[in-house]
Image (cartoon, rainbow, N blue to C red; front, top):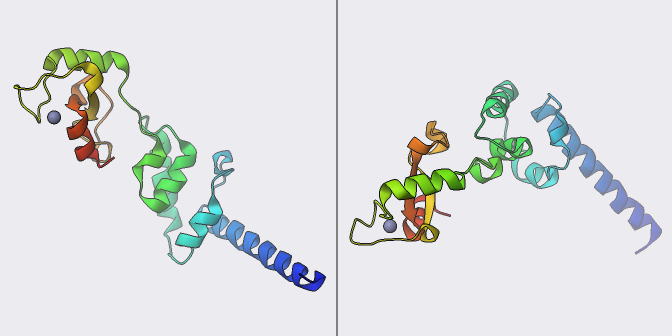
Length: 156
Ligand SMILES: [Zn+2]
C-alpha cells in the first residue's frame, strides 16, 4: 500500500467517524454520559437513513429512564432504534418470589396441567402481563412455567 493510499483510507475513516458522531448528535440532541461506549457505528450503518422525530425519541427516553423495570440506560438508546427489549435488561424475578409462586402452584405448570409435576429447578419465572403491556416484576404478575413452555412463550 502506497503512502498516498494510506492517507486516503485514513481520511475516509475519519470522515466516517465524523458522520457517525454528527448523526448521533442530531438524533439524540440531549447528551448523557451513558451514551459513551455504545456501538454507534453499527447503529449508524443500519438506521442512518431513517428520519426520526427527535423530540418524540427524547420523550421516550425519559419515560424509559423513569421506568424501574428498565435496568440499562445505555440499552435504552439501542432499544429505541432496534425495538429489541433484551437491551433494556428488564428486571427479573428474584429467588424469593420464584419460590413463593412455585409453592403456590405446587410444582404444576399451568400450561402442562396437573398431571405433570416439576422441581423448582425445572421451571422458570414468567411475567403474566409482559413489560410492554405495563406488567411489573411483582409476585402477583409472576407465574412459574416449565422450561419448554417458558421458552416457547418468550421466544428466547
Ligand atoms: Zn409446561
